[in-house]
Length: 230
Ligand code: URA
Image (cartoon, rainbow, N blue to C red):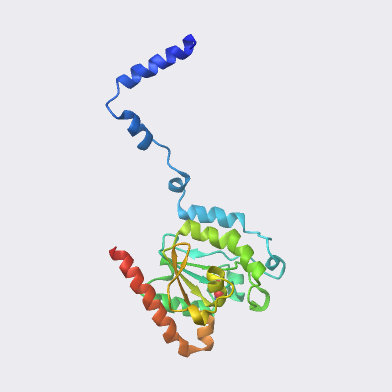
């Protein structure tokens, strides 16, 4: 060992000998630098994600008349996340999910659950408006899921996801899933509880099904209440 290294080792040993017992352990824990997770809030992580895809051209929807990419909104610390199909005309103009007629009905459902829209998180499987509000194609859905939806889920870490309609439900539970077979029951998606229910736009055409959706919402409310007490 050269003289310089020996000198600094001796200095360190003198320093260590003067410290209280356990100082090395404390240095590792209390003094350890915070991880990225603790440094950056969920809001900041989502903002960074959305900034990256603000001009996304990864799927065909980019060139089919969308005005803007419509990202999720709400409280990223919410336990509950609603996922719809994709922006319609109003959402494409305003840049926010569920602001048209279906959105107003969704707001009523949320309020009937004793919640406020801004307390929960709302997003879509695809973030760009499909032309004529057609159902997103598998290529569009899968691309957007990988680039955005799954990353939103990894940041928000919701406990319960309510998928609204077929496209959202298939997006999480599989392309072959039929909404009428799976709605009203909790399913698993990577450790997250998924409650599929009918889309508010479907309820506007079939108001009698509002009762069915309300039954599904009651199951979500019961589960959220259980989670509060455990
Ligand atoms: N329908 C959806 O699925 N999402 C919206 O944002 C609006 C209508």
